[in-house]
Figure (cartoon, rainbow, N blue to C red):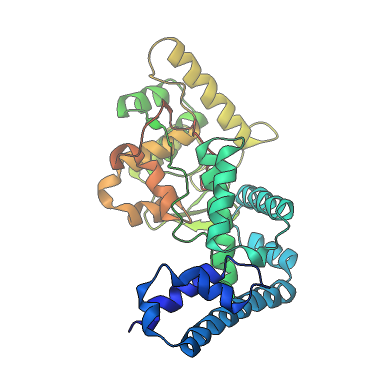
Length: 349
């Protein structure tokens, strides 16, 4: 029973000593701090010290083998290839480049990154440029990468898991349009734009998902959003179908023939112009964007539950859905603004 804490103590202190330190010096370094040592023979002390040094060498050897065995560049490409959108992949790539640069500066490899060094990396990031949410994104990307490697290599452990050095989130309070403001925008924009506002507010679809939107005769619909096929679990709401009919749009592919070379840009620009005009007139509390309509949908349906919302909004992570409900969930507030003006890069819109 007494040997177990001594082994831990010798391992802890021994790992801080140079490899050339004699075992007598290792024992001497810890002998004065633990009275349990007095009950052990010299041979027992030597056995414990040798075991501690051997364990340290084995751990170091495993890291060296892993550093040679893992093709880090290829694994990075494989990890990024699983990202659901180019925006997510770019954000994660930049984060991993920050980590690689830090490791190079410290003369370390990816295999050397233990929890203590991971915390040092986080603290150095916090002390540098960028806001807290950018640093959180960097840490999340690096942690996800090591979790990815854990599934592929038995020797790898995620050194970021459980860290206390991660900066707190600073998501702003979202200014979300009210139902009366939604109705006003629809009233002031007859035609395709009004129908688009109605559909986004009623279904939570992204503006980019409207162009390939296909509605079947039974009201079920599917589209492509952020490069992925989205099959709605619910039929198109009756008010949205009525808005399509009133706008004179095709009932099956309502937005397939919008004007301009980029229909998505056309919708975004005209919605922003409308919202800015109404805001300037004092009729809207903020110059809302298409993204704010998704926040409106989330708030209107929050009683349905987080997982229900996640499936309707098409979020890869439940954490993204939580951000949409940060007003309700009581996230730490630092500023206020439209829901579209996020304080950090949101890779899951």
